[in-house]
Each structure stands twice: as structure tokens, then as C-alpha cells.
Image (cartoon, rainbow over all chains, first blue to last red; front, side, top):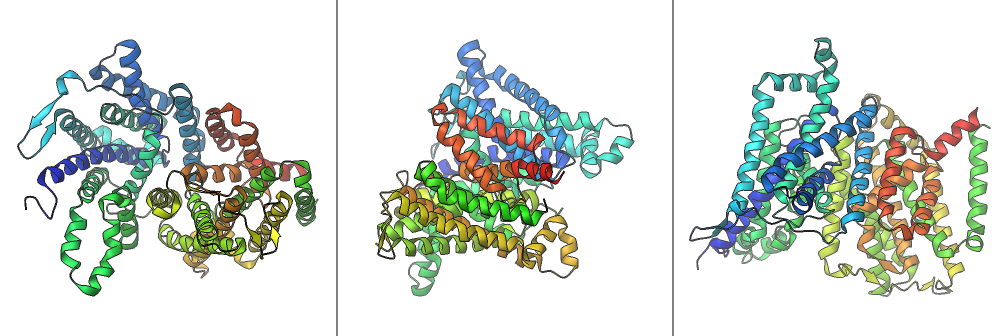
Length: 322
Length: 307
């Protein structure tokens, strides 16, 4: 038998790559949510819609204006980020003194409006975005085929995530941000323009979402609901990781993506079968667990992990109660 | 007017309007309003009176619908048994989801309920007995207690009204009971409620299970009305819709969610020809409510009458 626990090596590595890819998106999106939450105390429900906007702007640019992928990767986040800053200045700003829940409700409404408008204009069937020539094709490693574009997405996400981590944790600009997260009034008393900082932070978080959207455009079908399906999973990722730490968001995102990939490969289900199926009582006890960890159930893997983390460590792996 | 007198007037209006409704509007439309109004009132018990924003209440509405549909259609039980089964399942699911979700508060609570409800959605999509994308179609309404034929629109309507009224009364009594006062105390100041010796987690969980059970009751009834249990009722759009009804009508007001449900269902019914715009309009109402109209319709009216 070739392979590990009844899963072919090609299958396993293929799913691991998909897991790493999804994990990159989880990381970049939960990072944006964490930065925004840190300073604004708002959960940005529109994050998924803004991710979708990023992908669509890239597609619109290519289709109607002849903007190539690399320019789209730069311009789309800038435009969506600027749009985010307008939203912050026009609407979110009015909510900072209220209960945090209102921020969630407002951004939920905004997400519906954005999604609805795109659905009205483009329908829900979706558009495809071709992979740029430079990154088309892939390499056969013998045990698996490695598409260049996917490697690029993982690499680009990691660079952006760790770049953001470096700026926030290791530079002076980042120290302002961390100070603002701890105590905005005091920071303002020191002469820092906190309202401007908040606007820019929101803009940056939104731009990250749009950047992820452009990266995703050639892989997934570009359609108006691509963001809302993803954002709920990212919420679960955020609950697992806790929003207290930047590095925590990145590690949790990638880790959960990988676990999801492993479950999808069927390895865990096979492993449980080979270990427990011959044991009479244990086999039936393990059965429901096996069902939850079967490849068909991979859509709920992250939610199951979230439930377990809530039971064991409610504040999240890297979180602190606040 | 003093609030008690105002409540009495509102109750009177509610009963009269409820009895007369099938003669004024299309009965199915009125039944839909009653089901969603009960759903919104159950939701308001959590958001308005306990301060817990659940973004996953569709899970209870939808699951109860599936269980009721299955019990009546496949197992062949009478409608009242089906509704009981649906409600009980929703309560049990509420216990599981509630126990997990109350471990965090505020924004995390909302995200956890949303994520767990999404899990229920995926399961509904894949499990064999839900009918997947097609849902459970052609659920028979059957004969109530084996005697009253519910296929008759008027009988069905009054059956739904006879479910709604006690359901709403339970919520009303809960809000005005000592238990309800503790819930309000938790909403206003949780650390203080803890320091006063209340087992806050137990109160929250009880409120959550009660809310889930009544949402299930609404979902079970809705399945019999439309003879259909589908993915729409488990989808997060439905969870958002119930938030909208409560917010628009006035969260933390007794009758607000009913008004909100009437407005939202009417919008969907008469706005069906505006297609995709329904989502945009829903979103816009959300934004307006949050920015400028946080008390909701009934909340604003109450202030108007107090002057």
C-alpha cells in the first residue's frame, strides 16, 4: 500500500496545499479583523463584502479597463481601503460611544447593501479571472503537481501578514497603534491624532481584505457571495485564536486551514478506523467523532474546533478576557 | 398614559387585530406574520432583555421546521405532536449552543452563535433526512387532534393564532417576572448582578433555552403553514432578518418585534417584484436604524406618548 493511513501521497499533499492556501486567506482576513477590533472595538462584518469588492474590482479592471493583475493587486486594495475610510468617517465614527453590538449591526447592514448591489449588477453566477501568465502552470515534484499561482498566494500572504506583524510589534508607528489599543484618551493627550489613526487603521484592515480578494480572484469563482460564506468561517477562526495578538491570528489562521486540509484528505477518519474499528465498544464510541472528522464533514471542522476550544479555553488560544 | 394602561390597550389591539386579520388580509400572509412575530419576540427576550445578541437564531427556527416536517410527513404523526417534537428539539439545540456561547460575551457571543448556526446549516445541507437543496416539500398539515382539518385556511389561521398568543404571553410574563428583572439587571450591569449573588450563567442559559424553544415553536408552526421546511430558514440571512425585525420594531419593547415583523414581512411580500433590491433595502434599513433610529418604531412611539 502506498501512502499514509490509506490516503495516497498525492491526495494528502494536494489537500495540505489547499489547506495552506485556505489558511493563508483565514490568516490575512482574521489579521485585518483583529487590527480593526483592537483600535475601533468593532467587529467588521463587512470584511467579507470588502474582500469580495477587492476581487470584483480586479475583475472589472481587467475586463473593462485593461488593468493587469499586478496593478490590480496594488490598486484594488487602495480603492477599497479608501472606500473603507469613507465609511469610517461617515458612519462608524458615530458609534464609538455606543455598545459594541451596534458596530456589528451597522457593518452587517453595509455588507448586505454591498452584496445586494453587486448581485443586482453582476448576478450570482460569477465570473472567472485568468491566472496571470507569469504564474500560470506549475511544477511536477514527482509526488505531486505544484501550481505556481498557489505557491505565490501562500508566499504573498505570509509576506503581508509578517510584514504587518513587524510594523505593529517592532516599529514606532506600531507602538502608537498598540498604545491606542490600550488607551486612546491617553495617547491623544500626548498629541497623537487618534481619530486619524483610527481611520487609517480601518482603511488598512479593509485594504488587507481587498488584497486577499485579489489573490483569491484567479482561484475561486469571483461572485457576490464569495465573501459572506468565508467571513463566517473567519469569525470562528477569530474565536479560536482570540483577537489579543497579531501573531496569534496569523498562526491560528494557517493552522486551522491545515487541519481542515488534513481532515479533507480523510487521513484522520482512516486513522480512527484502523485504530478503533476492531475494538468492540470503543469503535461505537468513536463513531460520532469519526463522522465529524470525515472528509464530507470538513466544512464544519473549524466550527467543531471552535466548540472544543470554547470548552477548554474560552478566551481563545492567544486571547485574553476583556 | 401610564405604561400598564398602555400595555392593556396594546394587548386589546393585538387580540382584536389577530382575530380579524384573516378577513382583512390573505390568511397565509397573516400566518407568516404571526410565525415571524413570535420568532422575533423570542429573539427579543435575549437581545432586548438580556443584552445577548445571538446571530444564529435561524438554527432554531430551521431545525424545528425540519424535525416537525419529518415527524409529520415521514413518521406520520399528528400536527400537534410534530410541533411539540420540533419545539423540544430546538430547546435541546438551544441548550447545546447556549452552553457554548455563554462562555464568552458581547461581540464574541454573536460570532460564536453565528458560527454554530452555520454548522447547523452545513449539516442541514448534507444530512439525508432534510432533503438537501430541495428541503422537505409537501408536508401535510393533517388533522388537529385527529378532528379539525387544517387544510382549511381559516382553521389553520386560528390554530396558528392559538399558538402565537400563549407563546407571546409566556414571553410577556417572563419579562415581567422576577426572573425577567434579573435578566434586565444582567443586561444593564453584569458584574454587579454577579456581585449581588446571582448565578448569571444559569440565568443566561435559561433565557437562551427559552428563546430557542419559542423560536422553534415559531419554526415548527411555519413549516405546517407553508408545508415546507427548507434551507432558507436555517440560513444566516434569516438570523439577520430576525435582528432586523427586532431592531426596527424596537428592541427591549414588548410589542416592538411584532411591529417589526409586520413591516419586514410586508416589505418582502409586496416588494417581491423588486428582486435583488430587497437585500439592499434590508441593509439600508439596518444602517438607518443603527445610525438614527436606535429605539425602533415602538420605542419612539412610547416616548411620543409619554410627553
